[in-house]
Structures are given as C-alpha cells and as structure tokens.
Image 1 (tube, helix red, strand yellow):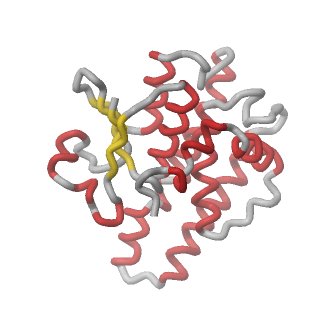
Image 2 (spheres, helix red, strand yellow):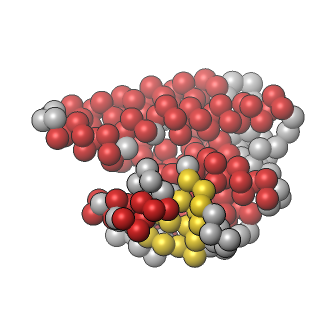
Length: 210
C-alpha cells in the first residue's frame, strides 16, 4: 500500500493512526499542500479532487476520502475494530466522526481559508471565523458524548471517533481555541496522547515534518 499524504493534513493524520492501530505498514508519499503539489497532474490522475489523503492499493486500486479509507481498513483488517459494538453504538461513533470530518474540518481547511483571504477578508476575520467554527463544533461534539464512559471517546479502546478527534484538536490549538471546558474530549485526548499508535502518527513525527 502507498499512502499519499502530508504531515499536517488532518485527514491523512486520521489514516496514519488507523494504519498504526491495525499494525499495518504503508509506503508514504508526500505532497506539500502549501506548494500545491496535490494539484500536480500525476496526483490528479489518482485523485481527481486533488485532496489528501489517497490510499493506493497493491493491485492499483485507489481509495480517496479518509473515512472511506479507514472503513476499508476496518473491513479488511477487523482487529482491533474501529467501529465496535452493536448497530446503535457504531452509528454514534460514525456520527461523532462525521461531525468533525464533514461539518467542522472542511470549513476551516487550507483551501477555504485561502479563498477567504483571496476575497480580501482581513486576516483577523478569517482566523476568527475558523476559530468560531471549531469552538462551536467541538462544544457540540462534547454534548454528543453525554452518558458514555472512557477513557477513549466510546469506551476502553480507540475508535473511528478518536481518529478524527485528535487531528481536530491539533487544528483547534493552531487557531487558539479554548477547549478547557470539554471534559470528556480532554480525557480522551489524554488517553490518546499516551497511545503508541497516536504518538507515531503525530505530524511532528513524520519524515516530511517541517
């Protein structure tokens, strides 16, 4: 397998964690987002969206979208499960993951913020808007966890939800969000911080880190 990513890409970060949890290795191919390398013709042939990550399988098949990649890994390498429990529990895990991957992350990623800057919005308005999106979204995610138990978001082991949480916390810190009141989220973040799979996947531990 070949994982096309970038050390600071939140979506690629999720997949790195999943691979580590599954004990799987992949060749890492790096595309510098700030240099526009994800728009190079060779990469666009793999992923016409020009987004990271993409997982290139040994048979030449390509999977795009981080959560689709994670679910493919889970179906083909089921231990440890990223979506454990019954149908309701799995739906709750997916809902949390999608709240981040679909509703919080996309509207404060590099492409969107660059577009706002190109439209001549002042920098403080651009970053302030991103901060508000993240803050409001994370507070809603905390509410989704009411009644559950840890130490991770949905029990005693990491799930798809935790894979999405940790990169988003990284973004929240970059934008100066105050997450101090998010008790369950912070507890899960502490549990992940001690887990080898999360440590190895962190941006600062990648070969292309700057």
